[in-house]
Image (cartoon, rainbow, N blue to C red; front, side, top):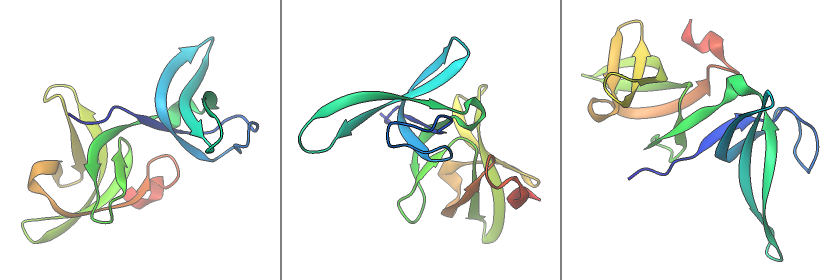
Length: 132
């Protein structure tokens, strides 16, 4: 079973986080038109849960997969990968019909089970030009 977690870009500057930082944790959805990710903070002396306001468009769920460099792959990540000895570039999306994450690119759709040498090269929020 894959770990259920999300990431998002910090909207609010405070609590030792800066606007534009990425945080990972439990997504709390929209509360009074604000979106939060709860994260666990353990500095060795005290453990606590903190809610960080994030930019809603940046929310992406962890796919349960890692790239070749052991980097976690999230929805809206842009990947380079190999299929049938050809190189492709695509974006990770959730396919409701198949109930799984799929990589979409100009040449079609690819499941994680058939691709090789996967590498995260960016995400749709920060690097949309990578898909051009």
